[in-house]
Amino acid sequence: MKKTAIAYWLIPAEPARSFLERTISNLARRYNAPVFESHMTIHVGSDRVEAEEVIAKAVSGCRLAQAKVLQVCESDEFIKTLFVQFALDRKFQQLNETIRDAAQDSSDYQLNPHLSLLYKKMSTLARRQLAHSIRLPFSEVTFESIKAVRCVSPTTDRGDVEAWRVVAAKSLGE
Image (cartoon, rainbow, N blue to C red; front, side, top):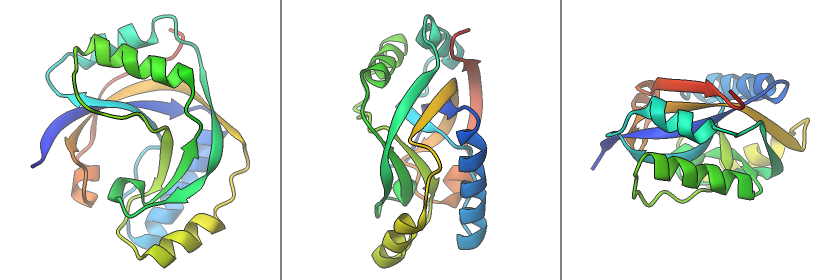
């Protein structure tokens, strides 16, 4: 059963942001898939709190965050068709916990730092070939801001992606 949720995203800084957004747009056009903003989901929780307050608490004392790229991966999960997998870092775990506490949220969201490049149902072979074809020109991604996005959970199709709405945003280090 689908419900409304708030997803908290970290947004990449330049120059990675431009590269990632071009990649997402090109893949979406090539595979007739939805276009979406490049982001790393840090937490997904209930849609019953004031997201602006949660973000303000989360970024208090938080500076730019860097994530180490591990590899480009694929899966049969719609929201992880093709994605960049990052190393799990204590800073991201702390941010996840801060958001969970500020939202007074008991959701069972498990942090798995990644940045999706494509949302599309495809064959395993096509996904694997695509994952092997992507070359990233960087080994780390710096994240400079956080957004709260109202979404349908679970997100399972293009319509769900196109219904996402940003409800709050803040730069890290503000």
